[in-house]
Amino acid sequence: MLPVTLDNVRVANERIRPLVRRTPVLASDALDARCGFSVVLKAENLQRTGSFKLRGAANFLRSIPSADLSAGVVAFSSGNHAQAVALAAKDAGIRATIVMPSDAPRVKLDGTRSHGAEIVLYNRLSEDREAVARQVREERGGTLIPPFDHPWIIAGQGTCALELMEEAPALDALVVCLGGGGLLGGCAVTAKGMSPGVRVFGVEPECANDVQQSMRAGRRITIPVPDTMADGLRTTCVGEHNFTILQELVEDVVTVSEEEIVATAAFLLRELRIVVEPSGAVAAAACLFGKLPTGLRQVGVTLSGGNAEPHFVRGLLDD
Image 1 (cartoon, rainbow, N blue to C red):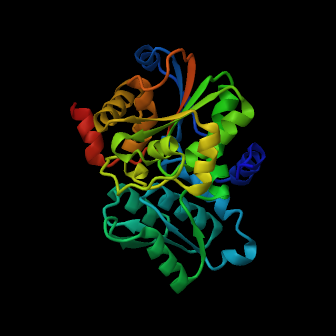
Image 2: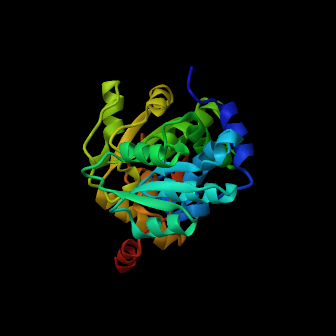
Image 3: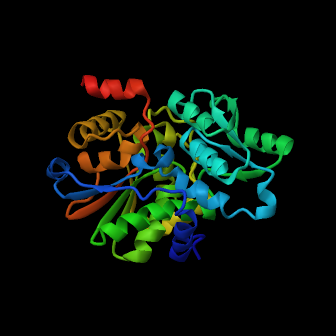
């Protein structure tokens, strides 16, 4: 049995509705012409806190027993999960302490602080973020909210696909960016539950392809911290719960280059007038650069986040 069901996602959807924005579904003639099939974009770059992560964080926090909430929450994140937990905690009126890498994008650090969270910095290359978070929790108390490997997180992220497929029920494929696997796992459960014939694909940066390797090997593979501009996808190993789902429901995991990520972000800015961070461009890049099987007609794509650094956006405008 899978750790998350469509019913779990539907319950999560009701639980998080007061806090989470129903994001728009976008289309573009120029994008369709480039891809050779119809594309609908789920614009989570326009979500509160700038990414889909609020869905999982809100569902987790709102699932914590009320007796435990007063002690606050602790999380570890490169940025988007951090901001999501900070906002969900602020909404609940409780303390949040977030462990973040010292090289996290400034926009994500500032966003996390803006919601009242305390940040504890660590060195991504020499320290284990989970160990740092456990130490913080031991010292200060509170509930640890993981970024992707938990059924409550996965179910919350699955609400992204629930909204998308309610608006675009005729999809024959769903394409989702992939770091730790929470978004892909939740979306796969949802998509397959609503439309069993839909094909589900994950997309990673070429230099961060731990999940592609894991799917090929049939076991979870751990890689060194990847050197990709897609900071939200710099995970070293897919989550255990997530991998169980991916093995059963995801057809394939494909990869895109750093150059393709930049080109896709520039295309989305130029043609749709929307800003995505590098991680948010990864799934669309698979469509633009022919990484999917032939014969697809209508494809749903997640734009997972829009927390782009100003210098990245300036570079897109200069091209």
